[in-house]
Length: 348
Image (cartoon, rainbow, N blue to C red; front, side, top):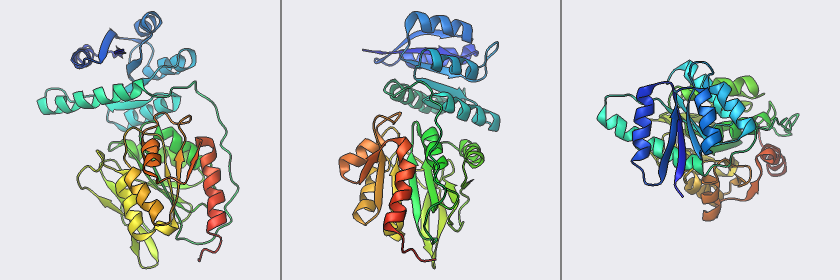
């Protein structure tokens, strides 16, 4: 069955471009376009689209208001169309919080090569969204650990995620105590969005969350997020660990790449690492997690039921690199229990 797609955007040019892209694919069918939320509502009720592309900035009713009502009344996979600005990034993160599956920046029109890359990316995101596990928004209270009974600076929690990961990582971090071992994070996001995402996490979590700059000493109570378009690696520096940023090629189809981060830990900190792989399309992180597992790291994966897309965890499990598979709500507590059980003799 073809994937039924509804395009909602106030720009006639963007509607035309997205319509042309969708109509070129045999497995996608355009059921309609809407310039505003009112037309979109009618089309949703009439045709029950499998995926909606939704502009954030629209007249009358903006995309966030429409999305919130949609996810309460008729949960549907949504790919947000966002502007590459700080305001656009903040709105996009709010959209993901409300239940959008993914987002893509508005295309730069007039550049043939850029449009072709955009075509490939939007088609991939629509196909991924069609398979996503979309649930009614739940208001969950994270199970907070008061503290972790662990001293030392050398333990590291490494987290990798992609589609659906912004909310999964947020819930995971909100379950960690202020004195948690350091957390290093790779989430597939473009430049600019990671800056806003780190600030958002920092305001919600008891950990200090920053976008990694490179060269930081990795310390307990802190989380370091890979910036868009840079790989985050961890290296040994005397008795300490430090962050390192690399602007190399795409790895496993991504930059930042979870595999790059995990493999850097294999070289310097495998036995001191707890690795967590979360929701996401593809297999980035699976090979790195297997290597960590083989070198003595404890490895966790998010389970299928709680994933938006059970791609990355599935691949890691298939390779045999995962020790424990748990629902998202149980991950942070289990990681803390693991730290206390395995690493009670940590040095200062």
